[in-house]
Length: 334
Image 1 (cartoon, rainbow, N blue to C red):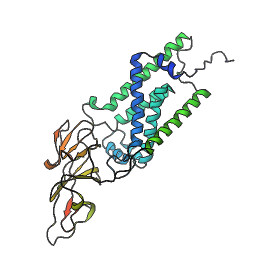
Image 2 (cartoon, helix red, strand yellow; image 1 turned 90 degrees about the horizontal axis):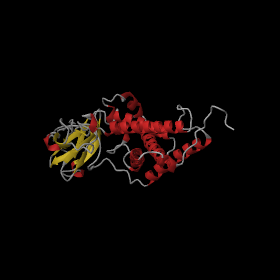
Image 3 (spheres, rainbow, N blue to C red; image 1 turned 60 degrees about the vertical axis):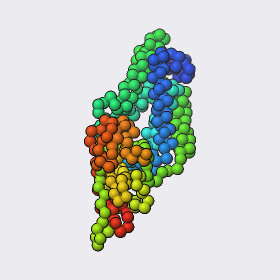
């Protein structure tokens, strides 16, 4: 028999947790839950996310996000273990989303969603201006509103049952622990299934429309007769890169970059970090322009990476490359 003054909070059924909430909160709950589950699955299903050297590699994203972020020191540590960081973020998103939809650890799930959104706001979308274009800040506000709604609902229920108003909504009994364990197992299972259905990893070869980052044009130069072969890292060769195509690579000190062949004997290279919000730009072979997937900024590689559409105001940062005329290799000078 429970002792006086102790009020054990029993875990609600999934249906009951939805029925007690007004429609406005149900809509918010469904959107946040589904979105976070999808976000976690998308990371595991992306064949490039855990593959170094590909356009969407988590390590390259962390390096890009760290520039100017208030969390630069934290992101710097995460860069040393990018795959583990990516897996933890993806699993946390699935757990938060599933917990929200199933009503498991309601406060813990909402607080986790708020923490993830604030972290992404201070890193991935920190440089988005004006602020209302950054989706992560809005997700943080949405999670805060949902968390307040949970506490308000629990407060009303506690008063109706004459329980202390300070009673916490999440219990710590055996049933709650089992539900939490089941949620963790479900998150791992969903993540593993998404990874199993992921396509093959894409090599760092011509890439298409999608990505995240900032940059500007690098000039391409041909060698002169009798000149020594250029020294440095070979990015690709002209016989492997048709006119109008592009290839991604990593530039020391700049991170993800793009090499575009603009004519028979000319190539240009830019940082892929978008100068508007820091997302990685991708290359559209049909229009032959670099496009940011976040807010639609477009950059023309034939005009020194100048912005031609969207919110970006400055060109992509240039990367110096050279063509070895003897071999046709495109080289990143050392």
